[in-house]
Amino acid sequence: MTGRRSMGAVDAIWLSMDSPDNLMVIDSVMMLEGPVEWERLEAVVQHRLVDRYPVFTQRVVESPSPVGMPHWEDDENFTLAGHLHRVQLPEPADDAALQAFIEQKMQEPLRRDRALWDLYLVDGHEGGAVVVSRFHHALADGIALAQVLLSLTDDEPDDDLVAADRPASRSAAGQAGPTGILDVAGRLTRPVTAGVRSALHMFGEIPAALNPSTAVEALTVAWQTGQIADKLLLGHAPESPITGDPGVPKRAVWSQPRPLIDVKRVGRATGATVNDVLVGAVSGAIAGYVSDRGGDPGDLTTMVPVNLRDGSRPLPKTLGNKFALVMLPLPTGHLPPLQRLSEAKRRMDTIKHSPEAVLTFGLITAIGHTNTDIAKLVIDFFAAKAIGVTTNVAGPMAGRYLAGARISSILGWVPGSGRQTLGVCIFSYDGVVRVGFKADATVITAPERLVHAFDDEMDTLVRLAAAV
Image 1 (spheres, helix red, strand yellow):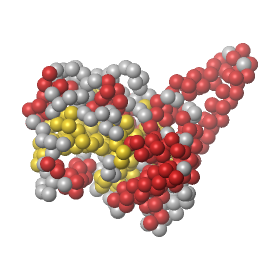
Image 2 (cartoon, rainbow, N blue to C red; image 1 turned 180 degrees about the vertical axis):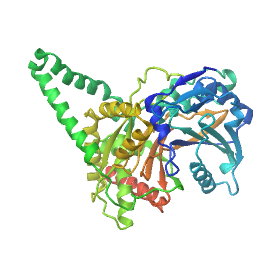
Image 3 (cartoon, one colour; image 1 turned 135 degrees about the vertical axis):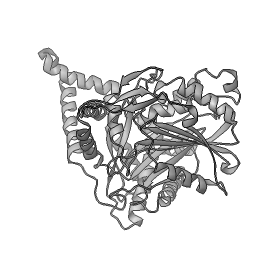
Image 4 (cartoon, one colour; image 1 turned 180 degrees about the horizontal axis):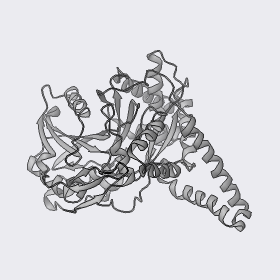
């Protein structure tokens, strides 16, 4: 036990953003090829999650002062059995049954009087099992939680029996870090921070301002900052078939596995990254859905989380949130697939060389130190400019095992806030990539069409790349 400790300012934001229409819960699924021994899973979760990260045994204590920060406090009534559950998937125990289970859980808030997480071992899915995880965003950002989940896994089936306390190999936990969309700022934080420092340094010392390269860099940062301010303050999400007031019910849909090598072939043929290709395909799927529903597929904006952790260092035991959000205008207008891909790459490259991530992280941190009600209003203001959140996690490139069972697939769903209605999570694992869409059931009434449209867009890009 660690006693009582203050909650970080950014963590407090995500705690306050909970609403019945958009819960701040990160959901994920590990699909397993066979059944799991309950006792082995209990031991793995106890040793590698509960014992390693104290926040998983702590509950939230609100401040008695309206301007005070919440605290984490040890839950004296904590038991693993209260958070690790076992259920049987009803017949026919297929993807539709699993989907219904996940969607039901997405409507249920995590109890505030205990630790903010739950794990479910769901037996019977297509002859195997599934582990469904639900973590509140106040615990940590999705990037860190992906690392935590993968730390439960092993290279070989019996590794958990050999050394239950041994940390997961770097091939698991290390590969859950930022690549693809997350790498929008994974590599930019150092050069951008240097650029911002140069701009500030220019005002501090005249000789630095006389250096032409420093002056150009400072002017560039200042110009970009103005553009970012315009985007954050003046942008808005236009009316479309995927915007509106969200309700409580959510839909969880996902694509079939697609070989990552196909995505890489498209990237090589077009001079794009894997991430550019996937963002282009997701943009095409959204454009197709909007058009099919009678809307005008103008550009729509999504929020992209950006990792600001040092990937060479282990996660702190207290976890927490350390990420920024950038606004990515998706090329969802009337464009042919290759042109859409080219535009996605251009926009991603622009963000990579922008100080937006550093600036928004500072903004989020500052907001976190304000009154909770004010923070919620400000975050809602910015969230209303986007349709939701889009993230990409690159998992291990080789198969992994959980309590002796081989993991066949991994999926995730990201939360939205305010009036956001569509979350997109791209997850690659063991040579394949899958996309999970979390859609508000009130606004987006046929999310399966998003999946079909994504598959169609990727099929078209693969064919065109082969022709190129």
